[in-house]
Length: 151
Image (cartoon, rainbow, N blue to C red; front, side, top):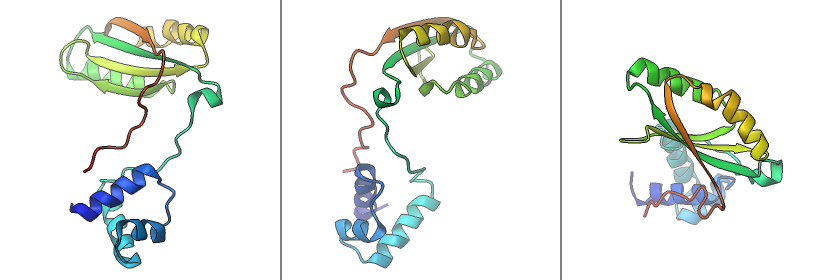
């Protein structure tokens, strides 16, 4: 990956709806070179997908919580079961496995506190292998979906 590829990635992080022509113009390469480089970045797996960023509050999902998960057991089967179960909960929009404690951090969106409580009581507390759950409520998003620092 060279500087031009990094420029392509930077521009696409800022606006994934750019046409190939506009992208090539912004990174100062020919249309054919821009198209070829873009396809190589897609086929190699550097570019994973394209999607619209949606304001959660504008679609009725104005409540966010961060959920810290401590597992009872660190065995691979238990962790696989937990991760599969978490992936099946559409309200969990981010999930990371961590080193140390807690074992996982999840970001959850719901309509309101009542919806979160219902989700917590019925699905999140029933996730396999969980020893302890701890929630904190998101007061304000300060940085959201920042582009990767490719420079």
